[in-house]
Length: 330
Ligand SMILES: O=C(O)CCC(=O)C(=O)O
Ligand SMILES: [Fe+2]
Image (cartoon, rainbow, N blue to C red; front, side, top):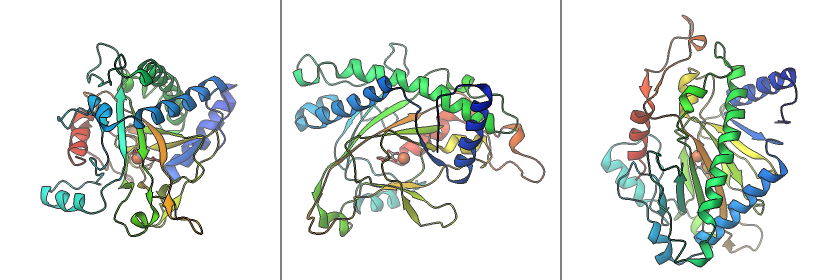
């Protein structure tokens, strides 16, 4: 979809309506012209840092290992540690799921770096790893830039939600609880992906408010696939579009809007090998998860339910819901 920089209130409302329609029908949209050239530079530079970080030795990466506490989603997770599961909480079934085709990826999570932040970040020691000098400063800047983009997209969406004031979402996002995830899907012999011995990310919905999925300017093959809302179980590729940010609705916007907005299942697959290709290339991506404040309660927005469309969700605090989903992922 087209997303020119907001110029006039009328233009803004029109774009808000289109944006809302895409998020209602599919739950996914390509955002273009949302970032300035300078902001796009920051995105590209973040990908360079991601390559540098994942290119370090395992030993150096483990110096910023993700803490054992499953709710502390910060720092480095090695290949195969996380297995995304959609709403499976039974420990036996989870163990079974993890044995088959573990997600073949490594990740580095970071969030708000203010001293007052709820979850402290876990940084590799830059003073001892010269290649990483400047990583933390840039990641912080990238985080801040995401907050500005967040304001724009949440306002545009609120414009389309019946009964929601344009600034409806502001009070729920006061604590900058967003999370950046640097992702690296390593390359491997093509046959391990074809046979299903390895996967990239299993089908899931995102459990925040919404996600800005930044794309690697060097990625031409993609791998993200989105479930067709009219054909459950059928996934449609969402190939990389130069300069665009992929946007998707998360579980909370679905709950707030009483299912008017869709938190759509998506997955990441290795691209099918081309003629004569025996090795599948690696891929980098950077989801920026926009998250609400943990103690806020999320309930259906009054304009989104009626006697014909009763409330589908009980109110739940952000923390309760996230803890439930997170504990199923590790
Ligand atoms: O790498 C991608 O394109 C998507 C990753 C994703 O869906 C996630 O991390 O939630
Ligand atoms: Fe996702």
